[in-house]
Length: 610
Image (cartoon, rainbow, N blue to C red; front, side, top):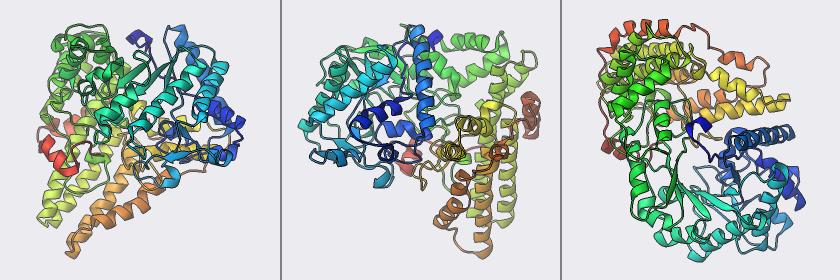
């Protein structure tokens, strides 16, 4: 991070132990906090007040371990000259606080993403209550006592993807005023850092008057706004550069840590400069706000350079230099691989936010609008160039990763092409073709799992092992495993954010996506053979009860992780990729219907298709 010029990182780890201490002073016990803190895989949403209690509790082992980790993180950040952003208080409190202070006033924000009220609809302390500022002050004071004076920057987001229960301008101003006062009461030099995502996500609610009320209670220069998805949905132009508050132009790029080649390279190459040079601009930097890493690394390499560039780069030349750095040598085929991707696949022409939501990793159904803004042949041509480059280049980790990634993308395209033919055969009631194409879909999934198993970056096993490594008791082991698997799959108790964080990983493909597709194909065949309409609603219920929910509960056995240990079936990514390239006839016969933005909007709404 430091070598890439990043000097203003978030540092939110370990805050739950600080909150435990603060709330203990006010009479809350561990049982009270068990109904407030969420599980390890969902901490980000618990901290923003979207959910509560879900997938918890947090053990004392976890709290201490995360606190120790935060000490190490902050020590490293400050040694590298970084300015950490620590958490602050934005008004969300445990329900148990009402028992301690029943005389105070509280409101509730709306429930989030379909979660039931007992797991969401968090409690917001009325900002005019003195306790609001007191809690903000005590929290930062306790952090400073634990970690020292490492920063003056604190993040607080009171209404992330949730409306307050009133649109009164006075209420919004009071929340902003109390939030900032709580910070400066503990640190007179405090600067409030907040996300600007809410102004896009709920634009109907956040009128210019309400937006200005939230942004201008802190003196100008004492707040920094993260324009969270500026590469697709910038907020600064419609808010007069956040009404004078400094902002950071951010590239979000990825939702849910999904995989799939995607980028808006032309916009990344020019839009930050345009924002910086705009009349009245208050832009002070650029940032990365992706929801997952280990994907589309080229986009982040380019974005990080925008902090010191004043003119757009020549993409072809930049790509040639990038591949030389990435692979440790100059090679024409390697250059062509990324030049083709950069011009076509990584340069989405619209603000489509549905990248990575491929049918292969979605709950099976018909009429799915696959994101396809490029000609699939561009991916296959890039893949062929990379395979040629691999015959002469050193087999570095980066090269082998890219070989697996382009294999994955190619097979994902083949899968969708076959899916379209499968759907057409179903519509024609051609039982024989449906059966053959259904078998082909399953075989493609087998091949995808095989190539993914050659690289640990695409391994469910490593994800599960990482979660297990934090456990010190059998109960923690069970909880962390379930947290890890739930986030990847049903994301909630009943599929509230189903498939939001899908991963094309070995183990996920073979043990989760393939069983879903096998059941889907079986039920489609049943409907044809019985001449009854296919019942999608009945299938959704069946697949959830038989496959999706049980997958997250596979736990409580010491040998659990071995179920997912598919990494190492082959281990030779290059040899496996070459075999697949030959098996699918260099992907010459693949055709996929291109999907327009209009198609997607008609299918699932104009904002996001989750």
